[in-house]
Length: 219
Image (tube, rainbow, N blue to C red):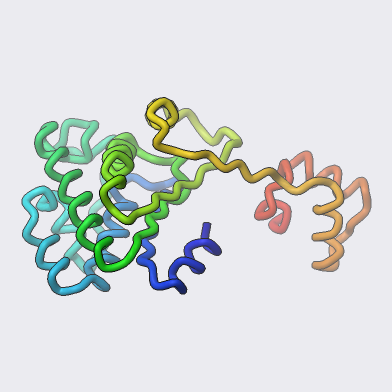
């Protein structure tokens, strides 16, 4: 994903990047991270449009703040409904989603957009609903959404299962599977870095990592 993003950036496309971490607790955090990038680099017209959208009022304090937002629970903040990231009702969420989509559409008229959502196996339900809205809206924008997730189970995430099921049903996503390294590839990697490439060692590493290149190099 990073290599592809670097390539399209070199071709003068706009790259937005937001990611979840295992300890991510703020709904819409990857979007906040991405919108901050847009506001820093966007044209004056787009910046004025974004800041003037009523739907973005819920995110504006976080986007404009130089500091980090206060922590909240994974399902929302203490003042919200527990499922919408602190937004009061469905209308507020819809205005927010429309504001983000309009921002992306406006900026995509200047250059194509690649929006990367990294590690969505840790995603919260409100942001997944926003991603769904963006996928439905991207047909009118010059925008490609790229999401990454691990196929090895990390934890229960019923919201993600539901999101992926709906997106496949509506044919809004295309899944690309990246398989792990095989025995010979792990052995070659070990030889390149000067590690023990014995067959027994390679077998042990494969059993522990399933060939994931990152984990292979960390062991």
